[in-house]
Amino acid sequence: MLQPRIVPRLWGVLPPPASDDPMRRIATVRNPESPFWIGNLRNSEFRCIVPATSVMLWGSGIDYEGQRLKHWFAPEDGGIFAIAGVWKDEDIPAFALLTREASGAAKTAGCNAMPLILPSDDCSLQTWLHGGWDAARLLIERPAPIPLIERDLIPD
Image (cartoon, rainbow, N blue to C red; front, side):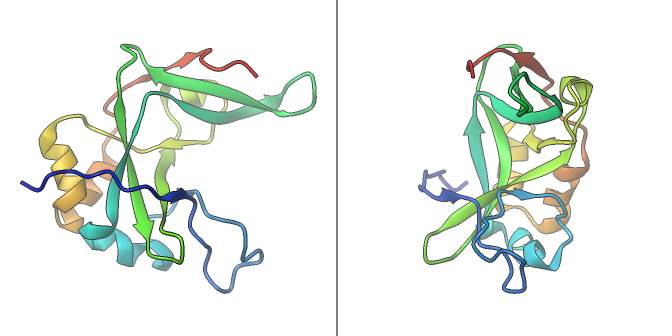
C-alpha cells in the first residue's frame, strides 16, 4: 500500500482553451464523463482526496442583502471526511472536487449539488486513489456514505 502524502494545490483548474472565460477556474467536476476530465479520472495518479470537516453549499433563495444563501454542512459526529478530487498539471498545479446531485439535508436546503464524499473505510479510499477507473467509478455512483447535517459553523 502506498503512503499518502499532502501536496499543496490551488483549488480550481484552468478551463479548456475554447472556454468563454479562459481565466475563470473550474472548481468542481459535475460530469465525470466529460472529455475534459476523463483522461485524468481514468489515470489514478491524478485522483486525490481532499480532507474536510465541513462544506459550504449555495442554497436556493436570497438573504436580506440580496445574496445567495450559504449553508454549512458537516457530519453529525464533527469528524473529518474525504471528498473525491482530481488534479491537473498546469503552471500552478490545481485540483477540482467531484460533485453529485444534492441529497438529504443539502437537497432540503435547496442546494443543487454537493461534493462527492468517499466512504471512510481504507479499501474505498485506496480504490479512489489507486484503483482502476471501473472500480473508482462505482464509488461515484454510490449513495453518500456519510450523511451531512446543516450546521451554523461560520457566521457571515
